[in-house]
Image 1 (cartoon, rainbow over the protein chains, first blue to last red):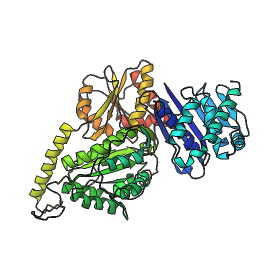
Image 2: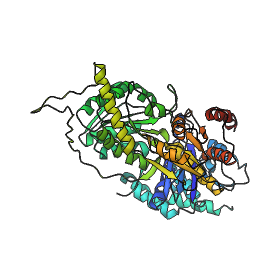
Image 3: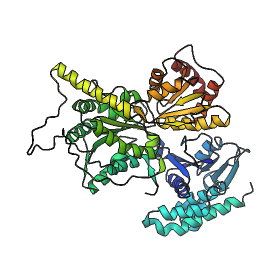
Image 4: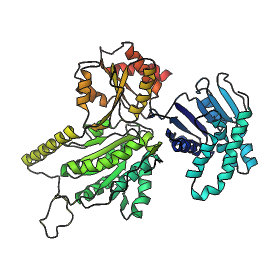
Length: 182
Length: 372
């Protein structure tokens, strides 16, 4: 088993942390995992992305050109990764930040209004966890519970009070994505 | 110890601390600055020495001085910074004191960029500083291997009174992987019989790289050469993948090696019997295992993130018996597995380059790669 996920968005949308949460959950459930950010000059205010590879044997390349899974938190990321996704793959799109629908018909594109859902929960910064929750509907290797446990185990003590809202964001994202017909 | 998610650069720093690093001297440069940043907090916390020098020249000469006392010392930098350290490195080698230098390589030449590259292979393995000197060079391909090799680097440097370099690229430095840290080793006074650590109640010792008398310099160089043969006999390390039934073999180190692993696995699902040899020590180089493989496989493909530097070492081991192909990306570009898979398919179809330097043939093929 090997699954690759690219998470992309603006700096400040929690792209890198969203990937780390998946990496922690994968590690804690005994899987092999790599997390690699793009660390070029684009980090300064532009787009940010990271690639997470989850496998059950030694991982070769930590980077992948055509991932089966991706999260696009803004329009530039949708523009870039819609075309790169492997056929049959699933793309989670933050509907709050895009003004167009999907162009490809050979992939599953799931639009989730991450910003609005995060604001309903009461913390707009949780938009990344909403997207991660939505992604889990297409990533059977990790359950909502796995990700919740990873957050609990690895979130710094000073942020632990945020756990319930993080759980809610994950759940809302998952449920929203589940309701969308494939 | 349980596994934790470690970023390559920070893992290298902590692994050095746990191996008993007593003094660190460095200067910031991307993509290795996290090592320096981590140690700037960690070393003072443990009462150990951390100095951000005024330049790379300052840093390497501080390493030189501290190494003369027999302490465990290191510096870290990235390509342009390591170039600046070459004079000091040669002095360290000439003085026969142990030191560790980590190079998190980036795209070059010149100022280049901060993206991952392996283009300092020749500088690390074959040259760099002036004069006849051997050096040990380790090339990890994962965060765990980087941790393990940091501990080894100090042991080897001290055992052979030699520089030990650890070369990796920015992607391993920035990548996070689950990894297990070794236990914290206590700082021990190794009481080397050469260390200039205070001549109280003993004869004064002098450490220097000056041999004004050429025959004396020749004796010193022959001594280094003899020690190097011991290193070559005892310290070669590599990892084999799918070699048992391999009809041809990819050779790649570090990130290029692990990207090749993905390509090899994909090729295996297509029924192509290809294997992978990943050198872990690139100096001493695993010539012997390649020599043996050359006797039974139909050829090799060398993959690197440079213009074909380790390629020459593979050809040296193969000695013209079978073809050696090359595929590289350079300037800070990391190859994707499908590029190497395309090369594997070409070779599996019998299209070996036999009429010219395989690097020329590769450059011609790159035209279509760049168009994709």
